[in-house]
Length: 265
Image (cartoon, rainbow, N blue to C red):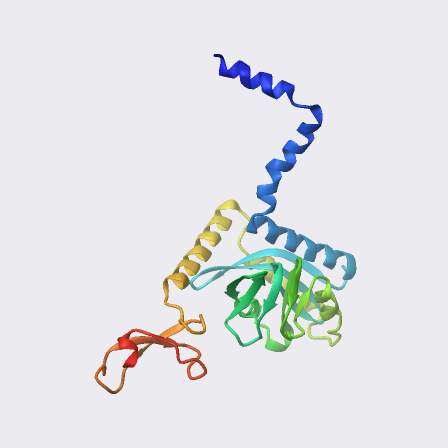
């Protein structure tokens, strides 16, 4: 049997309308990837900035990768104006979101499934500090903003610099006090453009490699069996286990979860 001929016969027998769906079937797996969702979220934030922020006063700089002491950090959007420098982190997520400004990890819940993810405010803090170091700006001149896009709902009270969709534009426009002169605005823009790494495949690959290494290191560290938060190494100071090391919750004394040293029995 000629399988090649059989395959061609089957293809030719398909209705013409079916071929319209072939590109969709190819695209569906791509549309579901975290990378595509992240880029789609960033595109929505960029569009909102272009539509609702005056280009003569607000200067948008996208996808900035900066070198750090331990590798690189990537900033989704930086908006520079006389009213300050706004560092915007985008999260494309769905479901219920639980968390507060102080928690290291937040919770995403979709139906009965729950998972932890890094507090995006803490994540953006590193971006802000890296940028401040580069630009030599004060805390009053740089603002951190986290924007959630997608079908998500905050189930706990959130700070004003954490918004949904175009809400970040309202946050920016609410800042009306002049914090930078026009000359300083241009100086900041030039410093960012000259300090950023070139948008090459190699630099992007190195940044992704660095992020994966950081994530792998965090995943290899023990998690608190009670709060699922980070743990720190401690030493038993009394009892039969004196001198032995164990891991205790970083949230101690609020959380007393521990691993090792026979659980201090």
